[in-house]
Length: 120
Image 1: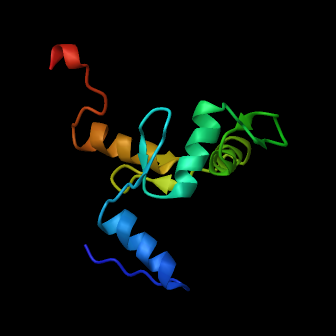
Image 2: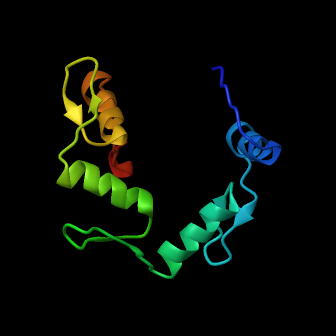
């Protein structure tokens, strides 16, 4: 697969190469040992998982989120009713890309999305 990346600073390009292409995760959480490719992701993890912070609040329903991205996803799919991801096989639409991928695997490729370890 060919990737084209263009950034304004060399440091951004180097970070991209380290985390995306080399798969490096140089930052470890000192509480649970989970690894991260960027320090900002580690800090976000510590705030939301270990400190339980939910700093982003929906102005329509007061639901709280640990990350701004989740708040925006919530607003787009729940309050705006947007379903931007359409299955190219059957036309079913989804609000989240992950739900579309799970649908394709389970329905059109016949792969089990969640498999019980006991019966494999």
